[in-house]
Image (cartoon, rainbow, N blue to C red; front, side):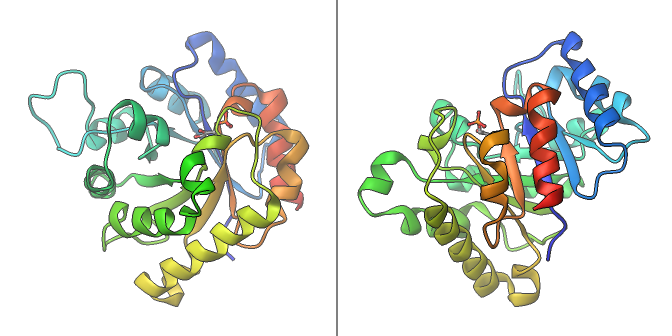
Length: 249
Ligand code: 13P
């Protein structure tokens, strides 16, 4: 079974004062039995990375440009993020797909850029409510997996996060059977494409309204290897019980 991963996505939240939450997390989880990743805004990556030095928690970013450098005002390359202290980067989050019109092809280019810079790519996929209600969920997931992941994806350089768009920040979560269906489907699709050895090694995270109250049930689902947590990762008081649930389920 892949080593489990609890990942937090602070999105566009947090200034320097919020980094004390990392101290609280490290104090509560001095020797975690799962991997811990926190992705603050890019402005905090270096300070966060310095803060967690010596602890197994690692720091990630939330996006990168596909090019290694150039005239792209306001953008950051994967190599810059690595240099700033990031060990991973979230790519293709539905908020970027929606707000910045990111396509599967662009996400794939970004995943390759992240891998080339030595970052773990957390590639996000997930259906909209309209797609789910239209019975298109597995088709959408299959397309996103086929088109957003490059052939060079391995369990070491890529993590997949299934985040149903309608579950993000809404307090709604899919039924447990719906999460199981998508994660089983993902495992099979990855095995078909990358071979069963690799396919079984990829970490498949669930994301979308994960809270202390529902974490254990979600982590009990086959092929759920952890979570990508938004709102509940902002405070150690909320994120810590989710980490506990992942360690104990
Ligand atoms: P919430 O946990 O706030 O629903 O956000 C999930 C998410 O988008 C993580 O990337």
